Image (tube, rainbow, N blue to C red):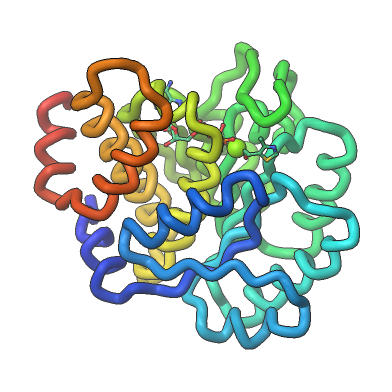
Length: 263
Ligand SMILES: Nc1ncnc2c1ncn2[C@@H]1O[C@H](COP(=O)(O)OP(=O)(O)OP(=O)(O)O)[C@@H](O)[C@H]1O
Ligand SMILES: Cc1ncsc1CCO
Ligand SMILES: [Mg+2]
């Protein structure tokens, strides 16, 4: 278990390029900053190349794209592939038909090293029956480990299917992260933060992308769990502030202690 990837993010301070959604962009930027990475969120196609050349990871979030931005999104994906920069896709609400068409077209032209979504989103990409609900996971009865594995094999990448349990698969290896707190669900953008964190962990992982995904999930979920244990009531506003603070301060020892306490 490479918890030291957290220390490596803090010492290397990798630049992480993001196409974010406009709803949660500030949480994603502050989350990356808190963990020790350096976020950048450009929008002009003319500067995509120079911005990617200074980046060590990239995340594309499909939460609020406009159709006229699709050429920019494709260009960023192609450049990240050409430059060998680890690339994460967050296919927000991809069970909706128009988004499904756009995202599957993107996946046909660009190689994403990671896909991170909730159960409704990853089930939609797997073509498995599931009652998705907009940006939320929705309901269904599929075997989520199998759903994650199917998408990983279909797109030759590492998949993170997040939720109360995170299922991680690269098509060959599978694991789960069982830490976290339900408070993540009452803060819109927790998943968007996790997707950008995967890019930051991948940036310092020396190409061990399965471990990068596992450590991003474990450290994010466990930090949230530590914060939630200190909150008296269910307070979404206080949670995000305390989470950003703790992402900056948490040590690998605290994470190790929290997971051995439960495991
Ligand atoms: N009920 C829960 N208990 C524990 N952890 C949870 C729970 N629900 C979500 N999480 C954690 O929240 C984080 C975000 O995952 P989630 O599946 O909620 O993303 P999402 O649905 O894409 O969110 P959003 O659309 O708001 O960005 C993950 O780290 C996951 O482990
Ligand atoms: C609320 C919302 N709508 C599109 S994206 C988004 C944020 C969660 O990804
Ligand atoms: Mg989401």
